[in-house]
Length: 103
Image (cartoon, rainbow, N blue to C red; front, side, top):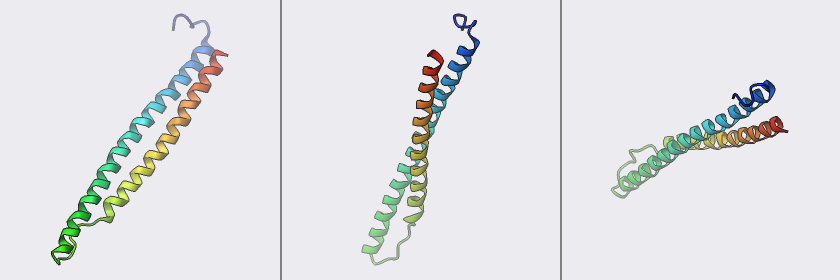
């Protein structure tokens, strides 16, 4: 920052916008992890339904719990959606802060 060192106010505003962009990236990565976990849980739910259908065809009681992975998957899915909304808001805030710093 030797080029903008005399303008400390500008440097602080640009650092703030950089932090907003960084937080947007971090929130996006966490949302991606939530999406991965939710899809894993949905796959477990589908597998449990398949095993239970096989048990039902053999006139046996169902052995697998279908609802628990579905609930967990839904929680992670909605957490991911929330994080994406926060990420977009943080990205927009970073853009606005950078524009305000340069205006």
